[in-house]
Length: 478
Ligand SMILES: [Zn+2]
Image (tube, rainbow, N blue to C red):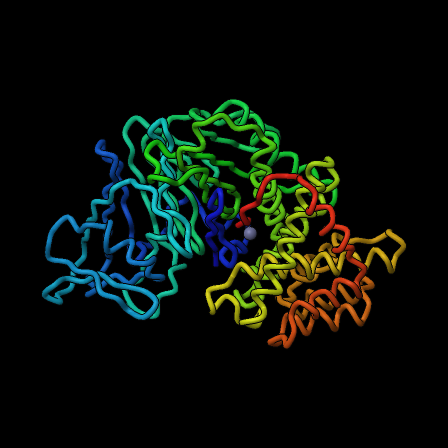
Protein backbone atom coordinates (compact mmCIF):
# COMPACT_ATOMS: atom_id res chain seq x y z
CA UNK A 1 0.00 0.00 0.00
CA UNK A 2 1.66 3.15 1.08
CA UNK A 3 3.72 4.36 3.89
CA UNK A 4 4.49 7.32 6.03
CA UNK A 5 7.73 8.46 7.44
CA UNK A 6 8.38 11.49 9.52
CA UNK A 7 11.86 12.94 9.49
CA UNK A 8 12.65 16.48 8.65
CA UNK A 9 9.83 15.74 6.31
CA UNK A 10 7.08 13.29 5.88
CA UNK A 11 6.65 11.57 2.62
CA UNK A 12 3.78 9.30 2.09
CA UNK A 13 3.40 7.10 -0.86
CA UNK A 14 1.35 4.52 -2.49
CA UNK A 15 2.45 1.35 -4.02
CA UNK A 16 0.18 -1.58 -4.39
CA UNK A 17 -2.43 0.62 -5.96
CA UNK A 18 -0.05 2.20 -8.33
CA UNK A 19 0.06 -0.42 -10.79
CA UNK A 20 -3.06 -0.46 -12.69
CA UNK A 21 -3.55 -0.19 -16.25
CA UNK A 22 -2.34 3.10 -17.37
CA UNK A 23 -5.05 5.49 -18.21
CA UNK A 24 -8.10 3.39 -17.53
CA UNK A 25 -8.95 5.00 -14.23
CA UNK A 26 -10.68 8.08 -15.46
CA UNK A 27 -13.02 8.28 -18.36
CA UNK A 28 -15.05 11.24 -19.34
CA UNK A 29 -17.87 9.41 -21.13
CA UNK A 30 -21.11 8.86 -19.29
CA UNK A 31 -22.03 5.20 -18.99
CA UNK A 32 -24.85 4.13 -21.30
CA UNK A 33 -26.63 2.12 -18.59
CA UNK A 34 -27.60 3.77 -15.31
CA UNK A 35 -25.01 2.66 -12.74
CA UNK A 36 -26.19 1.23 -9.39
CA UNK A 37 -24.72 4.29 -7.60
CA UNK A 38 -23.69 7.70 -8.81
CA UNK A 39 -21.95 10.49 -6.95
CA UNK A 40 -22.55 14.21 -7.38
CA UNK A 41 -19.90 16.48 -5.88
CA UNK A 42 -20.65 20.19 -5.54
CA UNK A 43 -18.06 22.61 -4.29
CA UNK A 44 -19.56 24.97 -1.75
CA UNK A 45 -18.18 28.44 -0.92
CA UNK A 46 -17.45 27.49 2.71
CA UNK A 47 -14.34 25.46 1.90
CA UNK A 48 -16.37 22.29 1.81
CA UNK A 49 -17.95 19.95 -0.69
CA UNK A 50 -21.37 18.41 -0.79
CA UNK A 51 -21.27 14.77 -1.91
CA UNK A 52 -24.60 13.28 -2.87
CA UNK A 53 -24.98 9.58 -3.59
CA UNK A 54 -27.92 8.55 -5.75
CA UNK A 55 -28.87 4.88 -5.89
CA UNK A 56 -30.68 3.35 -8.84
CA UNK A 57 -32.47 0.96 -6.45
CA UNK A 58 -33.12 1.25 -2.72
CA UNK A 59 -30.37 -0.28 -0.59
CA UNK A 60 -29.89 -0.63 3.16
CA UNK A 61 -26.26 0.50 3.20
CA UNK A 62 -23.35 1.90 1.26
CA UNK A 63 -20.21 -0.10 1.92
CA UNK A 64 -16.69 1.34 1.76
CA UNK A 65 -13.26 -0.26 1.85
CA UNK A 66 -10.87 0.35 3.43
CA UNK A 67 -11.90 2.07 6.61
CA UNK A 68 -9.27 4.90 6.45
CA UNK A 69 -8.58 5.08 10.19
CA UNK A 70 -12.05 6.46 10.88
CA UNK A 71 -11.62 9.43 8.53
CA UNK A 72 -15.06 9.15 6.89
CA UNK A 73 -16.91 8.72 10.19
CA UNK A 74 -15.18 11.86 11.50
CA UNK A 75 -15.37 14.14 8.48
CA UNK A 76 -18.28 12.95 6.35
CA UNK A 77 -21.34 14.38 8.07
CA UNK A 78 -24.67 13.14 6.70
CA UNK A 79 -26.84 16.15 5.83
CA UNK A 80 -29.68 14.55 7.81
CA UNK A 81 -29.11 12.95 11.24
CA UNK A 82 -30.83 9.63 10.54
CA UNK A 83 -27.67 7.87 9.30
CA UNK A 84 -24.78 6.23 11.14
CA UNK A 85 -21.36 4.73 10.37
CA UNK A 86 -20.66 1.10 11.30
CA UNK A 87 -17.31 -0.71 11.24
CA UNK A 88 -17.33 -3.77 9.03
CA UNK A 89 -14.12 -5.84 9.04
CA UNK A 90 -11.41 -3.79 7.33
CA UNK A 91 -14.08 -1.51 5.89
CA UNK A 92 -17.17 0.35 7.00
CA UNK A 93 -20.74 1.06 5.96
CA UNK A 94 -23.23 3.82 6.37
CA UNK A 95 -26.87 2.95 7.02
CA UNK A 96 -30.05 4.53 8.26
CA UNK A 97 -30.46 4.35 12.01
CA UNK A 98 -33.87 2.71 11.49
CA UNK A 99 -32.40 0.14 9.10
CA UNK A 100 -34.70 1.13 6.25
CA UNK A 101 -33.55 1.21 2.61
CA UNK A 102 -32.74 4.55 0.98
CA UNK A 103 -31.95 5.97 -2.47
CA UNK A 104 -30.32 9.30 -1.59
CA UNK A 105 -27.62 10.27 0.85
CA UNK A 106 -25.80 13.59 1.05
CA UNK A 107 -22.62 14.35 3.00
CA UNK A 108 -21.16 17.72 3.89
CA UNK A 109 -17.40 17.30 3.90
CA UNK A 110 -14.85 19.93 4.92
CA UNK A 111 -11.93 20.41 2.53
CA UNK A 112 -9.07 19.63 4.90
CA UNK A 113 -5.76 17.96 4.44
CA UNK A 114 -5.74 14.64 6.29
CA UNK A 115 -2.70 12.43 6.51
CA UNK A 116 -3.97 8.85 6.37
CA UNK A 117 -1.77 6.00 7.46
CA UNK A 118 -2.14 3.77 4.44
CA UNK A 119 -3.85 5.82 1.80
CA UNK A 120 -3.83 9.08 -0.10
CA UNK A 121 -5.17 12.26 1.42
CA UNK A 122 -8.83 12.86 0.53
CA UNK A 123 -8.14 16.54 -0.26
CA UNK A 124 -5.00 18.45 -1.12
CA UNK A 125 -5.72 22.18 -0.76
CA UNK A 126 -3.72 24.79 -2.72
CA UNK A 127 -2.92 28.19 -1.24
CA UNK A 128 -4.93 29.97 -3.97
CA UNK A 129 -8.14 28.14 -3.07
CA UNK A 130 -7.75 25.30 -5.56
CA UNK A 131 -7.85 21.69 -4.45
CA UNK A 132 -7.38 18.10 -5.45
CA UNK A 133 -10.12 15.64 -4.59
CA UNK A 134 -9.06 12.00 -4.51
CA UNK A 135 -11.94 10.04 -6.03
CA UNK A 136 -10.84 6.63 -4.77
CA UNK A 137 -12.19 7.20 -1.26
CA UNK A 138 -15.69 7.80 -2.66
CA UNK A 139 -15.97 4.48 -4.48
CA UNK A 140 -18.66 2.38 -2.83
CA UNK A 141 -20.85 -0.73 -3.12
CA UNK A 142 -24.49 -1.38 -2.28
CA UNK A 143 -23.67 -4.97 -1.29
CA UNK A 144 -20.76 -6.97 0.05
CA UNK A 145 -18.12 -7.98 -0.82
CA UNK A 146 -16.73 -4.52 -1.52
CA UNK A 147 -13.15 -4.02 -2.69
CA UNK A 148 -13.31 -0.24 -2.98
CA UNK A 149 -12.20 -0.42 -6.60
CA UNK A 150 -15.71 -0.66 -8.08
CA UNK A 151 -16.55 1.88 -10.82
CA UNK A 152 -18.44 4.97 -9.71
CA UNK A 153 -20.08 7.50 -12.04
CA UNK A 154 -19.14 10.96 -10.78
CA UNK A 155 -20.27 14.47 -11.67
CA UNK A 156 -18.56 17.57 -10.30
CA UNK A 157 -20.00 21.07 -10.14
CA UNK A 158 -17.84 24.06 -9.15
CA UNK A 159 -19.14 27.46 -10.13
CA UNK A 160 -16.44 29.73 -11.55
CA UNK A 161 -13.70 27.09 -11.43
CA UNK A 162 -11.92 24.87 -13.89
CA UNK A 163 -12.22 21.13 -13.33
CA UNK A 164 -9.41 18.88 -14.48
CA UNK A 165 -10.05 15.16 -14.61
CA UNK A 166 -9.22 12.30 -16.94
CA UNK A 167 -6.74 14.46 -18.84
CA UNK A 168 -9.37 17.10 -19.70
CA UNK A 169 -10.10 20.56 -18.36
CA UNK A 170 -13.62 21.98 -18.43
CA UNK A 171 -15.38 24.97 -16.89
CA UNK A 172 -17.77 24.64 -13.95
CA UNK A 173 -18.81 21.00 -14.42
CA UNK A 174 -17.41 17.62 -15.42
CA UNK A 175 -18.39 13.97 -15.47
CA UNK A 176 -16.27 10.83 -15.44
CA UNK A 177 -16.16 7.31 -14.07
CA UNK A 178 -13.83 6.70 -11.14
CA UNK A 179 -12.52 3.15 -11.17
CA UNK A 180 -9.75 0.91 -9.85
CA UNK A 181 -7.53 3.05 -7.62
CA UNK A 182 -9.29 6.29 -8.59
CA UNK A 183 -7.80 9.59 -9.65
CA UNK A 184 -7.16 13.11 -8.40
CA UNK A 185 -9.69 15.68 -9.59
CA UNK A 186 -8.40 19.25 -9.81
CA UNK A 187 -10.83 22.07 -8.95
CA UNK A 188 -9.42 25.58 -9.16
CA UNK A 189 -8.35 28.38 -11.41
CA UNK A 190 -4.61 27.87 -11.89
CA UNK A 191 -3.29 27.62 -15.43
CA UNK A 192 -0.98 24.70 -16.15
CA UNK A 193 2.68 25.71 -16.39
CA UNK A 194 4.57 25.04 -19.58
CA UNK A 195 7.07 22.30 -18.89
CA UNK A 196 8.44 19.66 -21.17
CA UNK A 197 6.24 16.61 -21.36
CA UNK A 198 4.01 17.58 -18.43
CA UNK A 199 0.83 19.35 -17.61
CA UNK A 200 1.97 20.95 -14.36
CA UNK A 201 -0.04 22.82 -11.76
CA UNK A 202 2.31 24.15 -9.10
CA UNK A 203 1.09 26.18 -6.17
CA UNK A 204 1.70 29.89 -6.84
CA UNK A 205 2.86 30.40 -3.23
CA UNK A 206 5.80 28.04 -3.63
CA UNK A 207 9.18 29.82 -3.57
CA UNK A 208 10.31 30.49 -7.15
CA UNK A 209 13.63 28.71 -6.63
CA UNK A 210 11.82 25.60 -5.48
CA UNK A 211 9.15 25.88 -8.12
CA UNK A 212 11.74 26.14 -10.89
CA UNK A 213 13.67 23.25 -9.41
CA UNK A 214 10.60 21.01 -9.24
CA UNK A 215 9.60 21.88 -12.77
CA UNK A 216 13.03 20.74 -13.92
CA UNK A 217 13.54 17.75 -11.65
CA UNK A 218 10.63 15.60 -12.76
CA UNK A 219 11.11 16.20 -16.50
CA UNK A 220 14.81 15.38 -16.00
CA UNK A 221 13.92 11.96 -14.60
CA UNK A 222 11.36 11.41 -17.32
CA UNK A 223 13.98 12.21 -19.97
CA UNK A 224 16.53 9.94 -18.30
CA UNK A 225 14.12 6.99 -18.26
CA UNK A 226 12.72 7.72 -21.71
CA UNK A 227 16.26 7.49 -23.07
CA UNK A 228 16.52 4.00 -21.56
CA UNK A 229 13.00 2.59 -21.85
CA UNK A 230 11.51 4.60 -24.73
CA UNK A 231 9.17 7.58 -24.56
CA UNK A 232 5.81 7.31 -22.83
CA UNK A 233 2.69 7.66 -24.92
CA UNK A 234 0.95 9.82 -22.30
CA UNK A 235 1.41 13.38 -21.04
CA UNK A 236 1.32 12.99 -17.26
CA UNK A 237 -0.08 15.61 -14.94
CA UNK A 238 1.99 17.06 -12.09
CA UNK A 239 0.30 18.67 -9.09
CA UNK A 240 2.25 20.44 -6.36
CA UNK A 241 0.07 21.94 -3.62
CA UNK A 242 1.20 24.06 -0.66
CA UNK A 243 -1.16 23.92 2.27
CA UNK A 244 -2.49 27.36 3.25
CA UNK A 245 -3.29 26.11 6.78
CA UNK A 246 -0.77 23.43 7.62
CA UNK A 247 -1.06 21.38 10.80
CA UNK A 248 1.06 22.85 13.62
CA UNK A 249 4.73 21.89 14.02
CA UNK A 250 4.94 20.02 10.74
CA UNK A 251 8.19 21.62 9.54
CA UNK A 252 9.00 20.45 6.03
CA UNK A 253 6.38 17.80 5.49
CA UNK A 254 5.04 16.31 2.33
CA UNK A 255 2.83 13.59 1.02
CA UNK A 256 2.58 12.37 -2.49
CA UNK A 257 2.65 9.59 -4.98
CA UNK A 258 1.41 8.57 -8.38
CA UNK A 259 -1.85 7.45 -9.88
CA UNK A 260 -2.25 6.51 -13.52
CA UNK A 261 -1.16 9.55 -15.52
CA UNK A 262 -0.58 11.71 -12.42
CA UNK A 263 2.22 12.63 -10.04
CA UNK A 264 1.28 14.73 -7.04
CA UNK A 265 2.89 16.06 -3.93
CA UNK A 266 1.30 18.03 -1.13
CA UNK A 267 3.69 20.21 0.85
CA UNK A 268 2.71 21.29 4.33
CA UNK A 269 4.41 22.84 7.31
CA UNK A 270 5.98 26.22 8.10
CA UNK A 271 9.31 25.10 6.72
CA UNK A 272 8.15 25.62 3.15
CA UNK A 273 7.72 29.33 3.80
CA UNK A 274 11.35 29.77 4.88
CA UNK A 275 14.19 30.15 2.38
CA UNK A 276 15.21 26.78 0.97
CA UNK A 277 17.99 25.94 -1.44
CA UNK A 278 17.46 22.91 -3.69
CA UNK A 279 20.48 21.06 -2.24
CA UNK A 280 18.63 20.92 1.08
CA UNK A 281 15.77 19.01 -0.46
CA UNK A 282 17.50 16.39 -2.59
CA UNK A 283 14.88 13.94 -1.34
CA UNK A 284 12.42 15.79 -3.60
CA UNK A 285 14.58 14.85 -6.58
CA UNK A 286 14.57 11.29 -5.32
CA UNK A 287 10.80 11.43 -4.91
CA UNK A 288 10.33 12.55 -8.50
CA UNK A 289 12.81 10.04 -9.88
CA UNK A 290 11.06 7.25 -7.96
CA UNK A 291 7.61 8.33 -9.17
CA UNK A 292 8.85 8.75 -12.75
CA UNK A 293 10.21 5.19 -12.56
CA UNK A 294 6.70 3.94 -11.79
CA UNK A 295 5.40 5.42 -15.04
CA UNK A 296 7.95 3.40 -16.97
CA UNK A 297 7.33 0.25 -14.93
CA UNK A 298 3.70 0.21 -15.84
CA UNK A 299 3.84 1.66 -19.34
CA UNK A 300 1.86 -0.62 -21.56
CA UNK A 301 1.14 -3.25 -18.91
CA UNK A 302 -2.40 -4.26 -18.11
CA UNK A 303 -1.75 -5.66 -14.67
CA UNK A 304 -2.03 -4.27 -11.22
CA UNK A 305 1.55 -4.31 -10.02
CA UNK A 306 1.72 -7.39 -7.89
CA UNK A 307 0.56 -8.17 -4.35
CA UNK A 308 1.77 -6.26 -1.29
CA UNK A 309 3.89 -9.24 -0.26
CA UNK A 310 6.00 -8.64 -3.39
CA UNK A 311 6.11 -4.84 -3.20
CA UNK A 312 9.91 -5.10 -3.27
CA UNK A 313 9.72 -5.57 -7.03
CA UNK A 314 8.11 -2.25 -7.88
CA UNK A 315 9.00 -0.10 -4.86
CA UNK A 316 12.55 -1.30 -4.45
CA UNK A 317 12.81 -1.45 -8.23
CA UNK A 318 11.75 2.19 -8.55
CA UNK A 319 14.24 3.22 -5.85
CA UNK A 320 17.01 1.38 -7.68
CA UNK A 321 16.03 2.98 -10.99
CA UNK A 322 16.13 6.38 -9.24
CA UNK A 323 19.53 5.57 -7.75
CA UNK A 324 21.03 4.55 -11.09
CA UNK A 325 19.96 7.66 -12.99
CA UNK A 326 20.54 10.17 -10.17
CA UNK A 327 24.07 9.10 -9.39
CA UNK A 328 25.08 9.99 -12.94
CA UNK A 329 23.97 13.59 -12.59
CA UNK A 330 26.46 15.11 -10.16
CA UNK A 331 28.88 14.32 -7.33
CA UNK A 332 26.43 15.77 -4.84
CA UNK A 333 23.70 13.42 -6.02
CA UNK A 334 26.10 10.49 -6.15
CA UNK A 335 26.93 11.02 -2.47
CA UNK A 336 23.26 11.41 -1.68
CA UNK A 337 22.44 8.14 -3.45
CA UNK A 338 25.29 6.31 -1.71
CA UNK A 339 23.99 7.54 1.60
CA UNK A 340 20.50 6.26 0.86
CA UNK A 341 21.90 2.87 -0.09
CA UNK A 342 23.93 2.72 3.12
CA UNK A 343 20.82 3.66 5.13
CA UNK A 344 18.74 1.07 3.29
CA UNK A 345 21.29 -1.64 4.09
CA UNK A 346 21.01 -0.89 7.81
CA UNK A 347 17.22 -0.54 7.80
CA UNK A 348 16.73 -3.73 5.81
CA UNK A 349 18.99 -5.76 8.10
CA UNK A 350 17.29 -4.40 11.21
CA UNK A 351 13.78 -4.92 9.84
CA UNK A 352 14.29 -8.44 8.54
CA UNK A 353 15.50 -9.50 11.99
CA UNK A 354 11.89 -9.43 13.14
CA UNK A 355 9.87 -10.26 10.04
CA UNK A 356 10.22 -12.03 6.69
CA UNK A 357 10.08 -9.66 3.72
CA UNK A 358 7.06 -11.53 2.37
CA UNK A 359 5.20 -10.74 5.62
CA UNK A 360 6.47 -7.18 6.05
CA UNK A 361 3.36 -5.48 4.70
CA UNK A 362 1.02 -7.43 6.97
CA UNK A 363 3.28 -6.58 9.91
CA UNK A 364 3.02 -2.85 9.15
CA UNK A 365 6.59 -2.69 7.78
CA UNK A 366 5.97 -1.99 4.14
CA UNK A 367 9.03 0.29 4.15
CA UNK A 368 11.17 -2.82 3.97
CA UNK A 369 9.98 -3.34 0.42
CA UNK A 370 11.68 -0.08 -0.53
CA UNK A 371 14.86 -0.64 1.43
CA UNK A 372 15.44 -4.36 0.86
CA UNK A 373 13.94 -4.16 -2.62
CA UNK A 374 16.42 -1.48 -3.67
CA UNK A 375 19.33 -3.59 -2.43
CA UNK A 376 18.00 -6.61 -4.32
CA UNK A 377 17.64 -4.63 -7.55
CA UNK A 378 21.10 -3.10 -7.12
CA UNK A 379 22.53 -6.58 -6.53
CA UNK A 380 20.95 -7.68 -9.79
CA UNK A 381 22.40 -4.60 -11.49
CA UNK A 382 25.92 -5.21 -10.20
CA UNK A 383 25.81 -8.92 -11.00
CA UNK A 384 24.60 -8.49 -14.55
CA UNK A 385 27.12 -5.70 -15.21
CA UNK A 386 29.96 -7.89 -14.01
CA UNK A 387 28.81 -10.84 -16.10
CA UNK A 388 28.54 -8.75 -19.27
CA UNK A 389 31.64 -6.59 -18.76
CA UNK A 390 29.37 -3.58 -18.28
CA UNK A 391 27.28 -4.15 -21.39
CA UNK A 392 24.05 -4.93 -19.50
CA UNK A 393 22.41 -3.42 -16.42
CA UNK A 394 19.29 -3.60 -14.28
CA UNK A 395 17.51 -1.75 -17.07
CA UNK A 396 17.99 -4.72 -19.41
CA UNK A 397 16.50 -7.03 -16.79
CA UNK A 398 13.59 -4.60 -16.36
CA UNK A 399 12.97 -4.29 -20.10
CA UNK A 400 12.80 -8.05 -20.39
CA UNK A 401 10.53 -8.31 -17.36
CA UNK A 402 8.15 -5.54 -18.52
CA UNK A 403 7.94 -7.19 -21.95
CA UNK A 404 6.96 -10.54 -20.43
CA UNK A 405 4.31 -8.80 -18.28
CA UNK A 406 2.92 -7.06 -21.37
CA UNK A 407 2.80 -10.49 -23.01
CA UNK A 408 0.64 -11.83 -20.18
CA UNK A 409 3.04 -13.14 -17.54
CA UNK A 410 1.97 -12.08 -14.03
CA UNK A 411 3.96 -9.37 -12.24
CA UNK A 412 5.54 -11.39 -9.45
CA UNK A 413 8.83 -12.47 -7.94
CA UNK A 414 9.03 -15.66 -9.93
CA UNK A 415 8.71 -13.94 -13.31
CA UNK A 416 10.99 -11.08 -12.26
CA UNK A 417 13.76 -13.45 -11.18
CA UNK A 418 13.24 -15.50 -14.33
CA UNK A 419 13.82 -12.33 -16.37
CA UNK A 420 16.93 -11.71 -14.26
CA UNK A 421 18.19 -15.24 -14.89
CA UNK A 422 17.63 -14.96 -18.62
CA UNK A 423 19.46 -11.63 -18.62
CA UNK A 424 22.53 -13.29 -17.14
CA UNK A 425 22.25 -12.83 -13.37
CA UNK A 426 24.38 -15.54 -11.77
CA UNK A 427 22.84 -18.52 -9.93
CA UNK A 428 24.44 -17.67 -6.54
CA UNK A 429 23.03 -14.12 -6.61
CA UNK A 430 19.61 -15.45 -7.63
CA UNK A 431 19.76 -17.99 -4.79
CA UNK A 432 20.61 -15.24 -2.28
CA UNK A 433 17.70 -13.10 -3.51
CA UNK A 434 15.29 -16.01 -3.42
CA UNK A 435 16.19 -16.67 0.19
CA UNK A 436 15.82 -13.03 1.21
CA UNK A 437 12.45 -12.63 -0.49
CA UNK A 438 10.82 -15.90 0.54
CA UNK A 439 11.85 -16.84 4.05
CA UNK A 440 12.53 -15.53 7.53
CA UNK A 441 16.28 -14.94 7.74
CA UNK A 442 18.37 -16.28 10.60
CA UNK A 443 21.07 -13.60 10.37
CA UNK A 444 19.76 -10.87 8.04
CA UNK A 445 22.75 -8.49 8.33
CA UNK A 446 25.13 -11.23 7.26
CA UNK A 447 22.80 -12.63 4.60
CA UNK A 448 22.16 -9.25 3.00
CA UNK A 449 25.85 -8.43 2.94
CA UNK A 450 26.51 -11.83 1.43
CA UNK A 451 24.05 -11.06 -1.38
CA UNK A 452 25.69 -7.68 -2.01
CA UNK A 453 29.17 -9.19 -1.86
CA UNK A 454 28.26 -12.05 -4.15
CA UNK A 455 26.76 -9.66 -6.71
CA UNK A 456 29.68 -7.24 -6.48
CA UNK A 457 27.96 -4.20 -4.95
CA UNK A 458 30.60 -1.95 -3.39
CA UNK A 459 28.66 -1.16 -0.24
CA UNK A 460 31.78 -0.69 1.86
CA UNK A 461 32.83 2.11 -0.49
CA UNK A 462 29.40 3.72 -0.08
CA UNK A 463 29.61 3.39 3.68
CA UNK A 464 32.94 5.21 3.66
CA UNK A 465 31.56 7.89 1.37
CA UNK A 466 28.62 8.61 3.61
CA UNK A 467 30.82 8.81 6.69
CA UNK A 468 32.13 12.06 5.20
CA UNK A 469 29.98 15.17 5.58
CA UNK A 470 27.72 15.12 2.60
CA UNK A 471 24.20 15.54 1.40
CA UNK A 472 21.37 16.37 3.79
CA UNK A 473 19.31 13.70 5.46
CA UNK A 474 16.81 11.77 3.50
CA UNK A 475 13.26 10.93 4.32
CA UNK A 476 11.98 7.92 2.46
CA UNK A 477 10.19 7.84 -0.82
CA UNK A 478 6.67 6.79 -1.64
ZN1 LIG B 1 6.50 4.03 -5.20
